[in-house]
Length: 307
Ligand SMILES: [Cu+2]
Image (cartoon, rainbow, N blue to C red; front, side, top):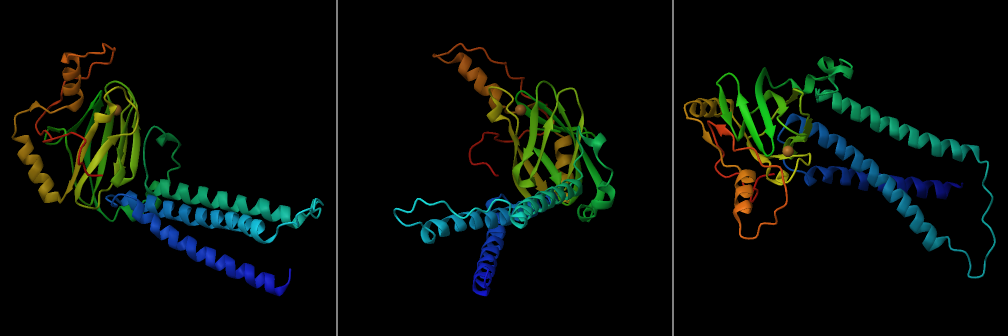
């Protein structure tokens, strides 16, 4: 390879790297707001993957395009290309680069996963590095807010054991570590708040601890990430992150309210369709009756809802 080719390749690499870095920064704007400390970690990892992916994509497509445009054979040239079999250097390079990349991605992903210190059904295989690595997340208040999450076909119900408050809207204090105790009464459900970038399967018959730290006040949306039957799409709830003061105020106000049946889209829709003139008569799991709660979300329909 002569000097000029090397310089050109070096220049192209630098341009591709710059475009890739720019693309990596764009990746942050493709998501809902970062409403939890975990969101920052996940988005950093995603941005890194986008940067790497852009570089490889542009490199491969660029090389192909270059070959197609400038390295064509003549019209009636049916001769073979140069035999390059047995080029040890080339083989070592194209084996080493993917190995390094894969190890890099795996190492970084594991580090993020460990910093999030997500506990779940796999916690017994957790390597116990969480305490040392969890530093970035513990800047928030040390006290952990413990809330029970009860899922069933098809409703979310939240229980605050200290105040004995039940609610169909999940209220969380800002900048506090939250520990959710996830339970399912029937089938597999999934706890997923896109703005928090956290997701955890809820497995019937198990009690799963799930921790994260909200860092941004606002209203977000909890969705079921596992298909759990007919009215699965209606299994959503609002998540309100508010200042600890407002949170405690809400808890006190909710505790004073007499429990009533909450609005439940699945139950309402089932009753509407079974009474409708045209009833297909298909068998379905009958939705559980609406939860009886102290605090009921005003409107839990899926339209115009926060992310
Ligand atoms: Cu579900």
